Amino acid sequence: MKDSDMLPGATGAFTPMPPRPWLITFADLFCLLLAFFVLLFSMSAVEVGKWKSLTQAFSRHSESPIAGPAKPLPLADHNKGGMAEQPALDLGYLGQMLDAHGKSNILLQNSVIYLAGEKLVISVPADLLFAPGNAAIDEKGGAALFDLAGVLRNIANDAEVVGHTDPTPVETAYASNWDLSLARAAAVADALKRAGYPREIPAFGVADSHFSELPESLPWLRRLELARRVDLVLTPNGGAP
View 1: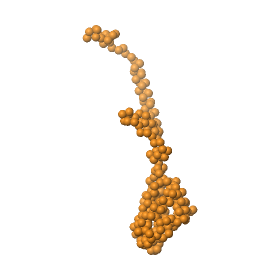
View 2: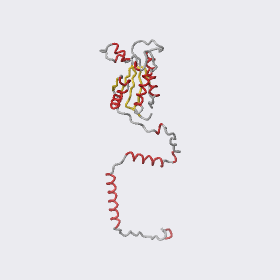
View 3: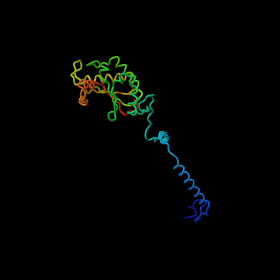
View 4: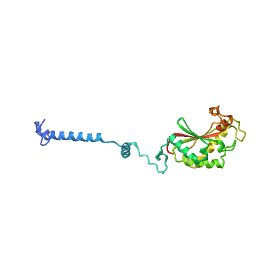
């Protein structure tokens, strides 16, 4: 290599760097600081909620421009995707609450409240709500359902209504016991919704298909009376209305 090819100020021979003892002290200090911060981190407790909020905030502001424009945030005050889900109540506690409330509610006073697996069932005698062979809720039944809805609208548990009949063939405008049981379930679900229950309530009619589950030791008339009922079934699941 010619002298003219060298950078200005460079020489042709390699000159070793003079020893710098302070680098050893600096390296030791750096290692001690690193160990100190690792120790601090290991002693700290990470708050998961704050950490998620922080990472979400960074992810919103650091999206790649190639990924396309960011989706606009929902503008509606009650947009379903942005609503916070409510936790469902424990069914054991809910049963105790309804049992206590039953002292002032004629419908609950005469109903059977029990746990069936993972569901809480409020079994309401149909005779308290409807005339024989009819699916129109009478005035007293409507008032009792309104009072019951005042309790249920404060919980987040999902619910469904199941209508039952006895095996006696229907002799009214309804084509069968299946139609009558479904019409009664739908009437109760509609009454609860109109009274303020905020969640959707599916309605089902099963006629007398569960009649055989009633104890045969009971008198026949008592079995018929228990068969004519509307079950309000509450589940442990819940969320936003």
